[in-house]
Amino acid sequence: MYIKKGRDKYMWLDKESQIDLLAYSPFAELITNITANKRLNPLTIGLFGRWGVGKSTLLKLVEKNIEERDMSKKKYVCVSLNSWIFEGYDDAKSAIMESLLRTLMDNQPAFEGLKDDIKSLIGRINLMKLGATAIKHGMPFIMSAINPAATTLTLAQYLSKAKRKEILEDIKQAWGEKEADEDKDTTVENIRLFRKEFSVLINKSQMHL
View (cartoon, one colour):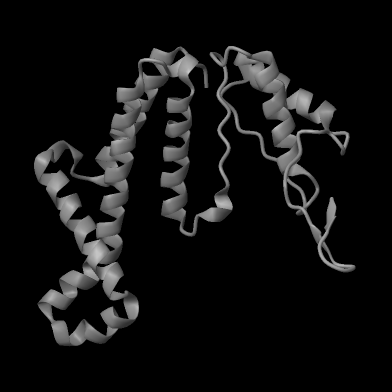
């Protein structure tokens, strides 16, 4: 869709639509039916196409179909995530997990009474992010402590003063969490426990993936 901007100037409105102007309803219905079939779950469906062909619109139509089928919101939960707003791969992974959990928390009918479980999982994600920060940014600080002259210039180029202070606080917090609970020591352990606790959460909610 084009929208007029100024005199004889137009720009493309990059926004999905809940109105089917592209005749995608049959595809949306097919995906909805597949999603509702427990024998086919869990599964991943990929949508491929050039920019502007309507991939987001198709997803919006699927979401609309699901909401119409499950008015009580006890069987299905739709989670939308804009991956373009995240810069790094690690950030994207953490953001996907956290966005999913916060959406589940907002879905009162299916996850009522499970907020504490969800908050615990979000806390575990925060620990993983802090661990990643310490690994990614902590080494230059350690090296500068060992040999300040060798890394002064590198650090000055690497981070601003405000960012260095922020990272130091993150590392201190991560170390404090480590001392408070040795079971949360490693990223690998956090991932293992996250998977286990997330599985327990889904079982409690009686949702199907």
